[in-house]
Every structure is written in structure tokens, then in C-alpha cells.
Image 1 (tube, rainbow, N blue to C red):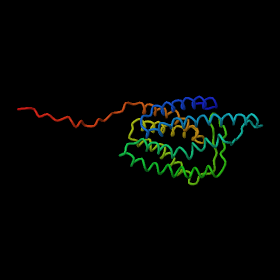
Image 2: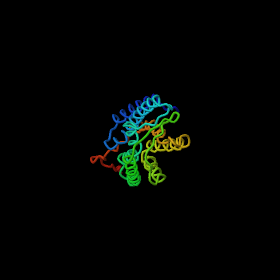
Image 3: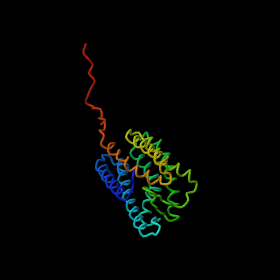
Image 4: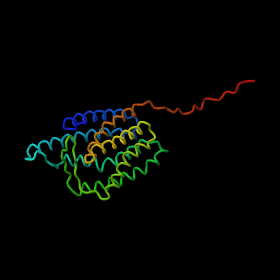
Length: 232
């Protein structure tokens, strides 16, 4: 997998188009936040393509050929990746869930909101930087207090909420994203957030299948229909 300005641009356009189709296919208002997730992740990839181009331009101007950059694009990317996603994903799953399953999703929402608050404070406290490392992008932020615990909360909120959904397609999305998280961490530990977000963007296309699946329509009992007792 080779990430570059072109790869992020093509992936971002494709996932954003899928996301627009997801939003157009939504039949229930409460499904809309989850249907919009591919749009959010597609735009996220488009933003990273801008980060890549800014980094390439800075590298060409640098004597060493490698440059660490900041700027609006890197900040927007970090805002979506760090404080927004751990709050947005469990809230979207909660919105789409049936009434009886919301109680088991609620704890993941609380974890996500707490994680988002900590990461939001970290982003606001200092500058966000980005630097190309091979074919991946490494982002730098201020040190995260209780970093291991916050990262665990991030993964529990985003992946756990998908896995406990009452919708089979959403659970499948959670499984794919969980396996992808393990693979991205094993291959690109320092660039985990960037590579995992890219994989999550591609996997979010499963939401389109969820939205387009046939739904069972429960019909109300007909009050005029009477049970017939066979005559003797």
C-alpha cells in the first residue's frame, strides 16, 4: 500500500462519492449520522492529500530534502482524526441503533466523549506538525496525558461501538476496522493514525451495503380480520 498525494486524492474522491450515495440512500433520519461517516472519512483523505503536497513543496525547498510542516491542512486533519472521530462514531452508532440496544452502546459513547475532550485539549494546547516518512505521513502533537489509556479509550469507543451494534453490517465494519488496526499498528507503529484512518475510509464503504439492504416491514394487525372457527 503506497500512500502519496495522488493515492490520497483518488481514495478521498472515491470514498466521498460513496458517502454522498450513502446519504442519498438513507431512508431513516436516525441513520443519517452513520451514513455521513464515509463523507467525513473521504474528506479526511482529501485533506491529507493537501498535507502531502505541502510537505512535498517544503521538502523541495529544504536543503535536507525532508521537511516538517504545520499549517491549516495538518490541523484540520488532526482535528478530525483525534478529537472528532472517537465522539462521532459511537454517537452515530447510537443514533442508528434500535431502542433496546442503545443501553449497551451508551458506555462507548461516554468513553468516546471523554477521549475526545482530552484529545481536543491536546490539539488546542500546541501546534500540529506533519512529516513524510517513506510512503506514510507522521503527525506530531503535544504529549498526551495518560497516553496509553487515552489510546485505549479511542479504540474502544470507535471499534467497540461498531462491534456491539445490533446491525450485522455495522458489526462487520467494526471487525474489518479492528483487524485493520492491528495490521496498521504492526506495520506502521509511528504512523498508525494516518494509515488506520485511510483503511477505515475504505472500509466505510460497507455502510452503503447496510443502507441498501432490504428491510423487513412490520405490518399492523388488521382489526377487521376475525379468526374463523370451523363449523361442526
